[in-house]
Picture 1 (cartoon, rainbow, N blue to C red):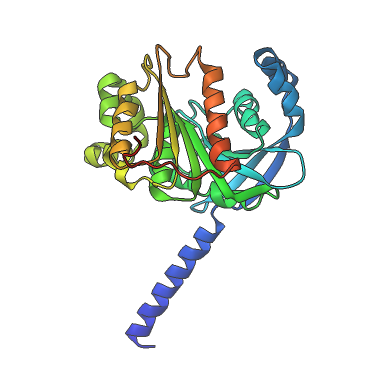
Picture 2 (cartoon, rainbow, N blue to C red):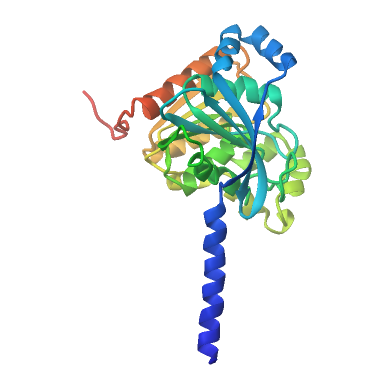
Length: 320
C-alpha cells in the first residue's frame, strides 16, 4: 500500500468517525418518567394554583442524551395530547451544580412553558448532575444545547419546524451563543443574560477566581479571547437575524447589571436585528415583583412567532 493511499484511508476513517459521532448528538439513550412529589406540587399550588391544575396534563421525563460522545442529563416537559406542538429549548443559569435544574424548577418553570402548549427540553450541561465531561460555561458545553435540536426529533409530538429558545443569566449567554451558531430558532427570549464578561468582572470581581478561572480551560493564558467568546456585545453582528429576540432585564439587578443588556441592545439595533427590549424599573435579577409581566411577555412573544408564525418586523427606518 503506497503512502498516499494510507494517508487517504486515515483521513477517511477520521472523517467517518467524526460524522458518526455528530450523528449521535441529541440521541436519547435513557428516558424515565418523572412524577412530581407531593411536596413540589404543594409548593407550586401555593405559588400558582392555575399552573398546578394545568400540570395534570403535562408529562415530565428525566433523560440522558448524547453530546460530543458524552452522556448528558436533561429533561422533557410536554403536553399530553395528540398532534404536534412547537418546541422550546430552555437554558438554565448558574455554573457547575449551582443553579442546576431541580424538581421545583422543572415543575414550575418547564411545566409552565409546557402548559402554554410547547414541548420543552432542557440540559444540565456537561459535568453537572451526573453528566459526563466538564462544564466550561459557554465553551464546548454549548454543544449540549445545540444537540437538543436533534433530541426534539425523537419526541413524537414535537414540531421541529417551530423551535424557540430561552434562558436566564448564564442561560441567556448560552442562548446568545446558540443564536451565533444556528438559525434553527424561530424566536428567542432572554432574561438578564450575561452579555459582556468584562463588565461583569467589574461589577463582580469574585467571578474571576470562583467561576471563570474555575471552569474555563487555560483561562489565565487566554483571558481576553475566552471572555470575548462569551460576550455577545463583541459579535452581535453574527447573531442570526432571522431569530426575533426579546430581552428583559431588571434595572436594579446586581448579579448581572442591566448595562450589559443595554449595550447588547444597542449593538443589535445597529445591525437591525429583530429585537424587543424591556427594562423593568427597580427589578432584581429574577424580576421579583414583575414575574407575571415577565411570563406574559414571554408567552405572547413565543405565541406570536412560534404558533402564529408571524413575519419578521421591518427594522429599517420607516413610517410617517
